[in-house]
Image (tube, rainbow, N blue to C red; front, side):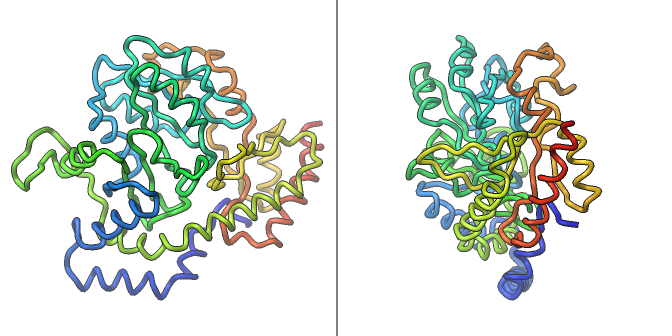
Length: 370
């Protein structure tokens, strides 16, 4: 089986360093907010070019606490995309605010700025922007909309560590950037992990308190918070991997280029969009293909694993039934959910395995469409 992602490949390549880091933490006996968490926060802040980074338990918690730190709550509307993982809208609703969806650009799968502008009302307080599949969203246009209406911007960078808009890293453009270190991410831990980054000392200070039960000083609690601390062991392992992420992203780009060369003449396959001046880090290589479900089934029969991210848009999810969106509300997102297919993508994907994926896809698509 050619997997959609191979999380063991990086471990095997860095096994000596990773094992040593793990043993050091275990021998040191400090497992909560220890020196590796502090060092990793500083190293990520330096890597991304921001003054503040705060390690958290997950990317979901990063979104939740980012919105909390911005005082987003009941009575507030927050605009976001309907084509994302559930955590994006879950974080909004978990704070008591109302997710307001805006349709996507069918070429990029990211928020359509015109749709965002049209969704702004007097209740709108923020925009949660998702850099889906590793492709930066149109931040120039969205930042202009936010500035015109006095809105905060939270960047969901769960799939986009190292992606850039011009020379600026995603996560550093809005008010808060939120990252996930889920094991399959471009920078992945060996369990859950997350982080917020920000230029605001006030936001960073508040998130540090919120992650520790709302306590700015131990045992003195200023507000209701939660237990959302990046694990010391995960921080130590992530510190080993961080220096390699730029190279891994470059390898992902090479894998993407081979896909483009091998599938360029396939009229029934739409390849991922690229934006001039922006760096796509290819967390996923996601195509659009007619007859998607049949293509996927046949590829699996040929021992090629694929994934559908995401088969049901957020506005049609049962959890958001009370928002009263109907089928047809966001046609671009609904069409994408029907057509998208993510192919095997990871830095260590061999040219031989990738050639097999391309050949089998080329052979199957015409038959499946017919």
